[in-house]
Length: 104
Image (cartoon, rainbow, N blue to C red; front, side, top):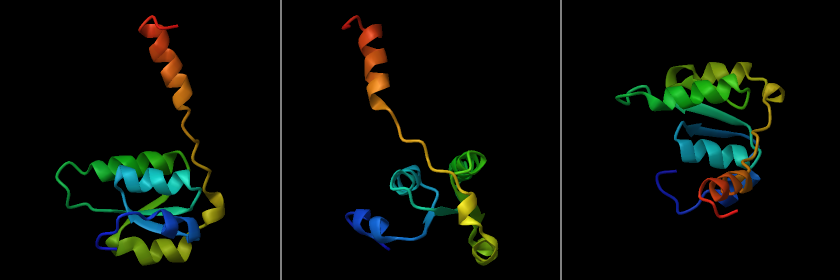
């Protein structure tokens, strides 16, 4: 997609998501429980997308590749090996802040 207000509907109906490695795109997809292949943009200056993709891959949540290896990744992928992404627990952070700030 070039631009779309929301991908929520598309993500909900997807069997597989292929995305760039933007943090928002990755997390939104993983929170929906969808298998994800992250395609790195290795032309970025600090290559922060690669760092995120590698960490999510180490955690077993995504597969990653670059444009030139996407077809190979699709042909050899085993989506059953991917682990579910652990959902956040914002209430724990809120409780911690309350304690630190003396509100509890």
